[in-house]
Length: 105
Image (cartoon, rainbow, N blue to C red; front, side, top):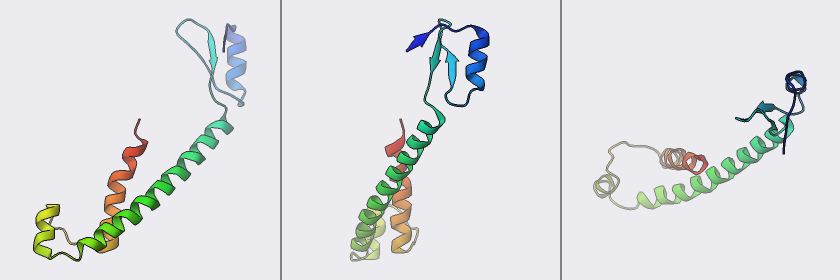
């Protein structure tokens, strides 16, 4: 939805906290999401992040537990690391590495 506003109307709309208004390249005012809509999106994304993190953490926890079954020499060759962490530390590090990539756009 695009409409032409005078500069005083634009300033009044900018001071009104119900929505953000800016000018597009043609001098028309365009309205973006209101603050409450932005908060709803942030809350929804936070919930999605937490859910995905918990699911990935559980998956990587099972992988780390399975990795403890194989001998240490083999595990170091397979993973390519010599860092010794707890099972939970390994799962947390893997989840912290993978989950943020799902939210990059």
